Image (cartoon, rainbow, N blue to C red; front, side, top):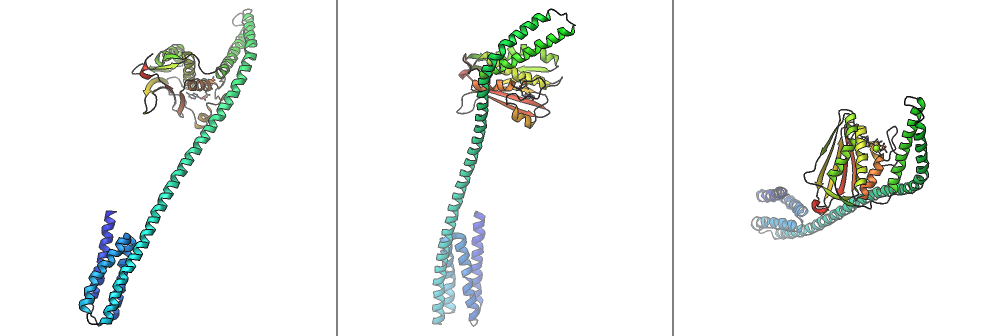
Length: 373
Ligand SMILES: Nc1ncnc2c1ncn2[C@@H]1O[C@H](COP(=O)(O)OP(=O)(O)OP(=O)(O)O)[C@@H](O)[C@H]1O
Ligand SMILES: [Mg+2]
């Protein structure tokens, strides 16, 4: 900016000096040339007014007057009519400098004003766009919540209707099983019947989990202890699948208010998914960290990272839909239940995946201040 001002000032000075030299050096018996040079002065005056506004126009006109006046006085002195005309021209220089400067300054101020308005409009537009995006997200959440609440009501009714006959089917199958020795094809069929009944029972249980109200028995829980309990449950499964399971302890104990049993259920669903997706030789790492953002309550983040198949973008969009599954024999409720439990604890569940490389599930939960029980 500074540099541009200097260059412009020098250009104007060069113009004025150049035109004045032409005046001083051109013999007086060539008046038509002097008349042309006289008009040439308007060029730097108008330029200065356009570049520097009112003050620029006036000061250039003044400078021209100062350098031009001695030429009139000392070189033309005597020819009164010519002299008068030239003094009049000087007056005109100043008028043109002033008016052009004033107009260009007003124009410039208006442009600045317009730019400011345009910036304000742009900001409002951005804000509006952001808000409409948020509305779309909230709408989507509402739709999902509505779906879940209808499902929940259905689940309560269904659970009652299905659970009891299911118990009887299982009971009678157990009795029938005793009539056949292992190896007998009918023994196998009855085993299958019992297994399938168990699976059906699990679906009903999952349904119920969704329908139940928020966790009522919130007690201080140590995240690490809950995770260790789960480790003992899944250790054999991980070993059989040749998957290395690593549970990294947090640097300091992380205590939260939670319903321990429900929390374990959520963690278990996430871990089972990871084990199912990870091929032999893979790895599942679970770690807990604290996170404190300014102005927010402290949260703990439990991350479950597997080196499994990962999830493609299309599937990732649907993993929280009830009954969405890519597994043969899957019910597609594991993550729905886990999410509901975590959100019931005021937390959030986030899934990120690098398709083909692995998946990271992050659960963030509000912490008890100071980590005390
Ligand atoms: N760690 C993971 N790696 C790869 N895919 C995953 C992972 N976790 C979830 N998924 C995908 O998300 C889908 C939904 O998972 P969810 O646990 O809700 O149901 P499911 O495992 O299919 O059935 P279930 O109800 O028996 O758990 C899975 O079918 C799978 O495609
Ligand atoms: Mg699952």
